[in-house]
Structures are given as C-alpha cells and as structure tokens.
Image (cartoon, rainbow, N blue to C red; front, side, top):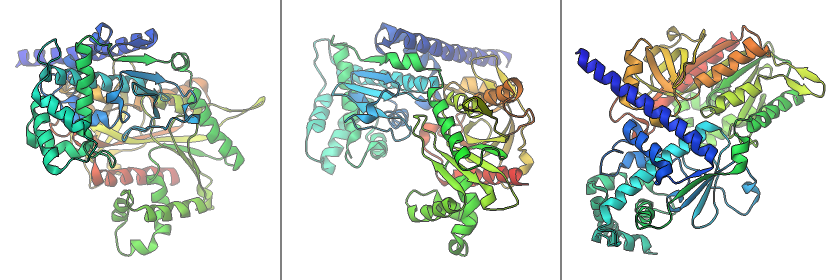
Length: 547
C-alpha cells in the first residue's frame, strides 16, 4: 500500500513539474515573440502536455484522435483557425475599426480576425491567463493534426492513403452532401482517425454550424493538410505575439478603463457615496431574483419561481427575458455594455428605487477570466481620481459566485471555500467566508480549500487526487479565486482604499468533476442542472446584503 501511495505521489509530482515547465516555456516564448509549435521551439510544450495528459484532452497520448477534446478546443478558438499557417496574438490594435469582420468563438468572448487565407489574429485583452489558454489549446490541436498526418501519409514522397483522397474530394465538393455521401465520407474519416463509424456519427453534429453542416470534415482535412505540408518540408505553422501585446501585457490598461467607466456612471447618477456591494456573477441571476416577482406576476400563478428561472435560462425565451429586463431598467438598474476590451459587462442596481428604506448599491460584474480577476477588482477598489481629489468607494462587501470543478460530488453541487491556494506557487489566501454550508438546504454542499489553477485544461487525475486526499483538503478547482482575494487583501489591508472589515462571500456551483470519467468539461455543459444552485447562491448573497 505504501508503495502504491509513493507511485501516486510521484505521478502527481511529475504532473506538477509538467505544468510548471509549460508556464515557464510559454512565458519564454512570449518574450521571444514567436515560435513554431511543431518545431524545436514548441517541443517542450508538446512533451509537457503529452506527459500531463489532462483529463479534458482525453486520449491525447494515444494514436487515435481525441474527439471530445477536439470539440471542446474548437469551440474556444475562432472558426477557420485550423486552416491558418500563421496565428498572431495581438492586443486591441484597432482591427474593430477596419473592414475585417470579428470572429467570436462559440465558448469564449474574444475578438479574432481572419487577415487573409493563411493568417488568423486573436485579440488578447484578458491578460496572461488568456494567452496560456490559447497556447495550450493550439498545442493540443497541432498534436492531433500530426496524428492525422501519420495515419494518412504513406512515405516521404507525399503518397497518401485512399481514405485521405476520398476525404479531400468530399471537402472540395461545392454541393451540400447527401446523407449517403456524408456517410461515405464519415467511414473514410473513421479509418483516418482510428475511431468507429458510430463514434464519428455521434459527434458529427456537434461541430456543425448553420452555414457549414459538414464542418467536421473540413476541420479534420485542414488539420491534416497543414501537418502533411510540414512533414514534407514546407514552412511550419508559426505563432507570433505582436510587439504592442508584449509591451502592454500586465499594465491593467483594459481594467483601468473598465473601472473608470463604472465610477463615472456612479458619479453621474449620484451613487458614488452610497454603500456599495460588488458581486461577480452573471448578467441574469441578480436581476431576475430582484425583478421576476414584479415583472412576471401572471407567469408565477402557473409555475414555481425556480421553474420560471429555468425558463429564463433558455435563450429561446427572449420575450420573457426582455420583460424582466424592461422592469429592471425602469426600477433603478443601469446596464454598462463593456467597450474597454475587458469583455466584462456590468449592471448597477440602485436598491433605493426598489425599497426607499435602503441606500445600498449593487455592482454586478460578469465573469472575469483567470488573472483578469486581479486586474479588474484591483482597479475597481482604487480611489476614484477627479483632478486633485480622490473619492474612496464605500465598498461594504464583495461576493464571488462562479462555476468550478468539484472533487467530491457532481454537477450542480455547491462549494463553500475557506481558502484559495494558488497552483504552482507558495501563495495561499485564507479568509472568513460570510457564506456557510448551513445557508443551503436541499442541495449537496461541501466546504474546504479550493485551488486556483493556472488553467483548467491542464489538470489530470493524479494531481487532483493529491490535492483532494492530502492535508490540503481541496474540494474543487477554479481559475479566479486567488486573484480576487489578492486584490481584496491589497486594497483593504495594504492600500487602505476600502475598509479592513469588508465582508467577502465565495460560493461555486459544480460544472464538472474531473475525477469522474465522463464528467469533465469536455463531456458537455450543465444544462438546467446549474439553474438551482445559481439562484440559491444569488438569493443567499442578496439576503445577507439586505438583512
């Protein structure tokens, strides 16, 4: 038994070392300004990812192509990125004012621009975490592309297997594929990918768009095509970092503009001197909790409150959602659509418009991404400069609600952290959480430390088991907690820009369990199972603010 524990510990240590190597390498490549992912300069990243074998990337180390991981990555990268030999990471450098049309990935709010047939620009406005996220996904993508190449390239003369030639013909067709033609193409792709016809058929629709129903075939073909060209001696794919991005990174440019926009709105509406409560959540749960009883009285006669919330979570119910938003805007809600590049929209609620006995103001900010949490909260909590004068915000509490991976339970459970441990460093942030497990009934709730990871896509079972089963007693993993708490502590205990007695609340609902096979993020979304915990947490936060 002791030998088994020793082996598990060694695997966890190897995984930790692999993550650290990846981040050191990515910083080095960023400072260098460019690299070739499948060349010598990208080898450390590739080897570290293959050693790590993150759960989200499934069978990355096998010969067969990983389908769920590929789908997860494709949803977070711009459409057409697999066709491009040159990928350029830029700052916000004015492309929004050009003729280029912004391409926004399905599952990541970032602007991307197809410059020409061979180049994709990806705009970075959320700091290092966004760069790490993109580089990790691209490394996975290129590893998979070389798997395809190895299965279709017969020799170094460029001779190709029949399956590949048939796929090429299907992709080149300008006509919409019939069912028969599609199934013939799928059978050839199954041979190329080392998967069954059934497996390909099951995920085929997940890759489709309204304009490209057969997009899966195009993705596989273009990934393989560029890898084949690399293998035959053509120029390799290149990732570059623009000089402006390298110069701006870490300077809080977007966070400062973002926070000043909020403070300008507070001043303009005579709210800047009122007690303020900051909530990092989403753009619906606080608004719906406050205004559904007034906006949807007729609907509440037919359905329960949580059934209404489930209906509102469906994008198809736009009319119902607009009803609530209209009442909210008429009763003290301000909506600030982000124009700073931070991609974080904001709602401001003047609660005196709902109840004249209260002076509270709520600032609800959409989710930040990784290190961006520090940049935004750090800037928001600074004093507001007006010429020679400084206005200090009366911030009474900060409440953080988010999705996280759970290590002890399943999707929809709630986690109440008592500390955030920052992965890859010696930093840890214990705090008094105003939220308690006893605040939540009829749902599974766990409490303990949470680990703020450098990237959710890099975690594997070995390292997560170690954190969960060791004396760290980690209950879950997420990407922002330590960054939020670092900003809160520096503002309250070092800068003195807010009170030392500021109250903090953290609660997360489980989006996945990376220790359970089939329950990782790549296995699919929460669906309606996230509605109940989202609103339970929101209700408890508001109850504590308003009591």
